[in-house]
Image (cartoon, rainbow over all chains, first blue to last red; front, side, top):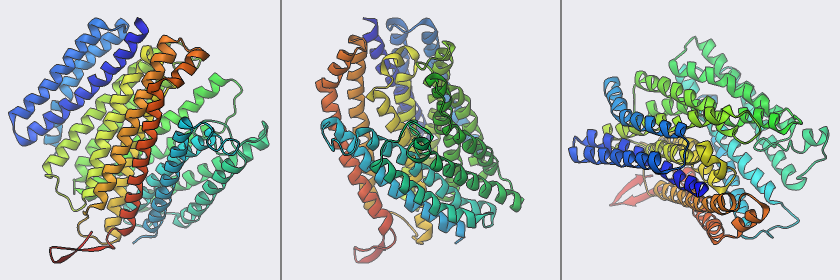
Length: 92
Length: 464
């Protein structure tokens, strides 16, 4: 049922952004501690975010416009922690 | 201490008091859902809800004003212009808030004429205050803007933070003028009303708290002005870039043209991106300072602000911001859950952080720590997260049962309200509200006694 599918999509979208947060925190923590394991955990979070994005694109009743937006923002999320980090290091 | 800083302390005291009133009104509003007969015939649910939301707006506003009055003379090196007027208006502001609250509780409703609008309440959500009080808010905000702008001009010192603050104060004052019109067409009325509600909260307030956090960061962590100003410019650009047209997510279902579905959804969906940048920044600051500071509560509340803003506004907001989903989620407890989390993260945590910072200075405490603030921090945050979790469950059951399955009929509405998920969600919200209230009591105790209590620890006197 499409309407119920949309509500399930809402939960997926929340998890999608939450995983982006996990990626950002672990990326920063890994850089600070200079520990590859934490950095890899951050990228694992991003990997899960990509998997969620795939589920949203393939299986949810969102319209193509919003699906393409989710796809594009998945790429944007990849860049934010490294770009922010590089900016912060240069600024300090 | 400058007179402006003494005024700041009064504003903080008033803000913390109203924070308490907000909690009491919130607990009452939560209890109505469990026992609808509560205070039947004496005080309606909507009055307690009005008190809850309006005191939220006022205590945060007073907290912001207190923070600016505290930092302004230090930033510009002089007493603010027109400080006498600001001191008088503080008492006028407090008296007006008290009178409006009494009118809401005792009179509750007025007649549907201009006397009702001017003397009892305007009936517009979040800006219910009668017109005489709304005029008063405009006067207070105008004098506040004059204090800031006039002082900057007189001091002939314009810093980057001051530029952002001054530019922000103009829409902050002007947008409140939107609290007055009483337009007969509900769609048109809501269209302009959202300019006030959304653009205050998701644009001007975001910039204001950004300026306050920039000033606080320089004092708390000794971060250089160059760094905080560079970050402030980026934050302002990103927040305004996404926040202004994010206004459109309020236009989905009020009778506006269809293009708002795309505009509102598109820009709102961008809003978590700058918030993620802020989270990364918070991790950087915490890590480079090794969590070491002379004011742990201020530092932890500042971190809570970055994370709370991301989760409350970013994660919770993104769940319901796409129009296809929002069709089922808007106006349910799901939205309430988002509102609670976002306001807490974006603003309340920041104001509490600044109050700790200010109290450390006024009471000359070399290092602020102890257990009181930890209990308050835990109680308030556990209570808040519990409340928004419970509201999320209740709201999801509403969206599911009432909207998606029931098709938004009256029968479906009743079925949604009687659902065990909804009912237990409301009970859990009240229970976590009590935990939140306990956290508030500990916070007030910590504020009042900070630097004044002496405990003996391992044979030596320690001030906490």
